[in-house]
Image (cartoon, rainbow, N blue to C red; front, top):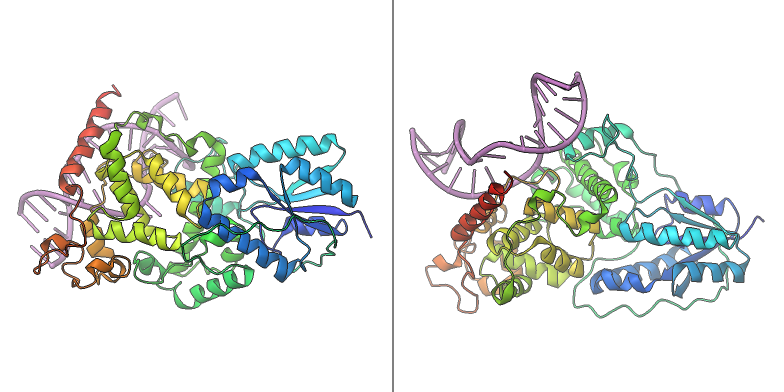
Length: 453
DNA sequence: TTTTGAGTTGTTCGA
DNA sequence: GTCGAACAACTCAAA
């Protein structure tokens, strides 16, 4: 019945609330395909790649009846070949708005259209796809709050239910490659695990989200980020379960909107994945050379001598994930205390993070570095000690990831150099003096400003 | 075109 | 210990 069509999975690894898949299934039997594109492996990082491959295995087993066709190669070639083998006449996929995805999809569209195949990009990975929310004069927003108002008014579809799909069986598959070795303890995969976690969040953490989300020792966030990254859940599904009247849930809704805002910013200004959004900040003095390399390495390993920074960096290595509050603290430390270019920190995050999303990651870093949209004022420099005391008052977060300090009490753990019994010898002394580096950052900013005329 | 109000997440200092 | 002001203008977005 109907023509055979290909459904090309990319960053939408789910079968529920899947408009693109529904559109494919309405045409006829569906060949579910995932293309192991060589360029996919490189930027992904081992943690994210491992999570993606396990997610695909779960999707295949739980929802595709084991019919997933995995092929290695260039998407245009692979999809063309499969179409030839199966007699498929059309390819359906969820639209991808990232810089790489756009280039790839344009090429695939051109190549396959030339071969007489239909290519349909449907829906997006966002409640409101990038390039839709505009100011009154038709330009993209550069400030979150007005974007948020406009985005809310724009609205989005309700999630759709289960779809009946006739999967095409017996198509040759290269099979999933072995997941790369990773020492990180990654989250459970699959739509079921994701939705169970979200239900847990709604029941136990959403109410206190406003406060608890800032406390890294508390399990107070939804932890949806890896699932959103691969489209295991769609933001529509989360928004539909959020009560807009409750304070905590309102705040959560804003966090979803931040993800959409940054996707929109990156879509409009793709070069900001690598360069300052605010070009007046491009010439900010940063440190290079051996000393900067040494400090950067100490930051990566979690050996800066500032407990909350080291706990965060070690959590990243251990779990491929870091609590959001701590991401800001360690980013501020790298940029404002170590004077290292934000792009180096952002790259390290992308290499490690299981939820690494180019738009959110790069623009989160730009916000901290003061180079981005709505950037924090230059004088807003996080003090790692007071941030530690304020958001990890018991010290439990530090204790979990920095065992050398486990014996210190709450009063001393965020400044072990003051410990009455002396600083534990296994833990490094601070590699820089925060007060002095803060002054240095302010002076660098003053010098930059003086060049603006 | 001009005006007006507002802008994620902080720190320090002095009263 | 608590609280408000200063930090420094600038750009954005809508009226």
